[in-house]
View 1 (cartoon, one colour):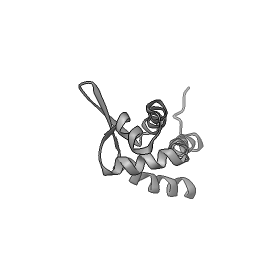
View 2 (view 1 turned 180 degrees about the vertical axis):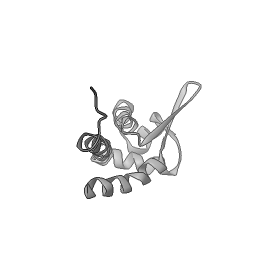
View 3 (view 1 turned 90 degrees about the vertical axis):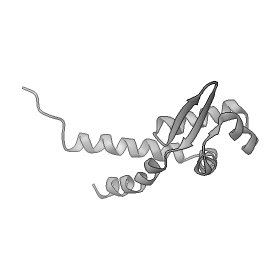
View 4 (view 1 turned 90 degrees about the horizontal axis):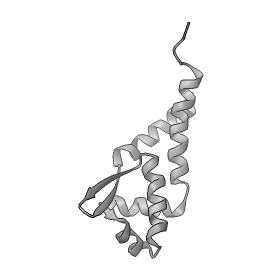
Length: 102
Protein backbone atom coordinates (compact mmCIF):
# COMPACT_ATOMS: atom_id res chain seq x y z
CA UNK A 1 0.00 0.00 0.00
CA UNK A 2 1.28 3.48 -0.85
CA UNK A 3 0.31 6.78 0.64
CA UNK A 4 0.63 10.16 -1.07
CA UNK A 5 3.39 12.42 0.15
CA UNK A 6 1.89 15.20 2.18
CA UNK A 7 2.32 17.27 5.23
CA UNK A 8 5.81 17.90 6.47
CA UNK A 9 7.74 16.58 3.43
CA UNK A 10 5.69 18.65 0.98
CA UNK A 11 6.36 21.75 3.08
CA UNK A 12 10.09 21.04 3.15
CA UNK A 13 10.15 20.79 -0.64
CA UNK A 14 8.51 24.18 -1.09
CA UNK A 15 10.76 25.62 1.57
CA UNK A 16 13.77 24.14 -0.24
CA UNK A 17 12.87 26.13 -3.36
CA UNK A 18 12.71 29.32 -1.32
CA UNK A 19 16.05 28.52 0.28
CA UNK A 20 17.65 27.94 -3.12
CA UNK A 21 16.39 31.29 -4.42
CA UNK A 22 17.54 33.12 -1.30
CA UNK A 23 20.98 31.49 -1.53
CA UNK A 24 21.17 32.57 -5.16
CA UNK A 25 20.61 36.17 -4.10
CA UNK A 26 23.05 35.91 -1.20
CA UNK A 27 26.00 37.24 -3.16
CA UNK A 28 26.75 40.89 -3.93
CA UNK A 29 27.60 40.21 -7.58
CA UNK A 30 24.33 38.38 -8.20
CA UNK A 31 22.41 41.29 -6.69
CA UNK A 32 24.31 43.67 -8.99
CA UNK A 33 23.48 41.48 -11.97
CA UNK A 34 19.83 41.54 -10.94
CA UNK A 35 19.90 45.34 -10.88
CA UNK A 36 21.30 45.40 -14.40
CA UNK A 37 18.80 42.85 -15.66
CA UNK A 38 15.85 44.82 -14.27
CA UNK A 39 16.67 47.48 -16.86
CA UNK A 40 16.44 44.95 -19.68
CA UNK A 41 18.03 41.87 -21.21
CA UNK A 42 21.82 41.68 -21.48
CA UNK A 43 24.40 39.24 -22.77
CA UNK A 44 27.19 37.87 -20.60
CA UNK A 45 29.71 40.10 -22.39
CA UNK A 46 27.61 43.22 -21.80
CA UNK A 47 27.31 42.43 -18.10
CA UNK A 48 31.04 41.71 -17.86
CA UNK A 49 31.76 45.13 -19.37
CA UNK A 50 29.27 46.90 -17.10
CA UNK A 51 30.68 45.39 -13.91
CA UNK A 52 34.33 45.03 -15.01
CA UNK A 53 34.34 41.30 -14.26
CA UNK A 54 35.41 38.41 -16.50
CA UNK A 55 32.75 36.84 -18.70
CA UNK A 56 33.28 33.35 -17.20
CA UNK A 57 32.65 34.72 -13.70
CA UNK A 58 29.48 36.48 -14.88
CA UNK A 59 28.40 33.26 -16.56
CA UNK A 60 28.82 31.29 -13.30
CA UNK A 61 26.71 33.80 -11.38
CA UNK A 62 24.03 33.82 -14.08
CA UNK A 63 23.89 30.01 -13.95
CA UNK A 64 23.14 30.16 -10.22
CA UNK A 65 20.36 32.70 -10.82
CA UNK A 66 19.00 30.65 -13.73
CA UNK A 67 19.00 27.40 -11.73
CA UNK A 68 17.08 29.18 -8.97
CA UNK A 69 14.47 30.29 -11.50
CA UNK A 70 15.20 34.00 -11.12
CA UNK A 71 16.63 34.62 -14.59
CA UNK A 72 15.20 33.71 -17.98
CA UNK A 73 17.45 32.86 -20.92
CA UNK A 74 16.79 33.51 -24.59
CA UNK A 75 19.01 32.48 -27.49
CA UNK A 76 19.17 34.84 -30.48
CA UNK A 77 21.44 33.30 -33.06
CA UNK A 78 24.94 33.23 -31.57
CA UNK A 79 23.94 35.39 -28.64
CA UNK A 80 22.34 34.37 -25.37
CA UNK A 81 20.49 37.10 -23.51
CA UNK A 82 19.50 37.02 -19.88
CA UNK A 83 16.64 38.88 -18.27
CA UNK A 84 15.36 39.01 -14.73
CA UNK A 85 12.17 36.99 -14.28
CA UNK A 86 10.35 39.78 -12.45
CA UNK A 87 7.25 37.71 -11.57
CA UNK A 88 9.47 35.01 -10.01
CA UNK A 89 11.34 37.59 -7.96
CA UNK A 90 8.06 39.21 -6.90
CA UNK A 91 6.67 35.82 -5.82
CA UNK A 92 9.71 35.31 -3.63
CA UNK A 93 8.34 37.75 -1.06
CA UNK A 94 5.11 35.79 -0.69
CA UNK A 95 6.99 32.46 -0.69
CA UNK A 96 9.31 33.62 2.11
CA UNK A 97 6.39 34.80 4.19
CA UNK A 98 4.51 31.54 3.61
CA UNK A 99 7.57 29.48 4.55
CA UNK A 100 7.97 31.46 7.77
CA UNK A 101 4.32 31.04 8.75
CA UNK A 102 4.35 27.23 8.43
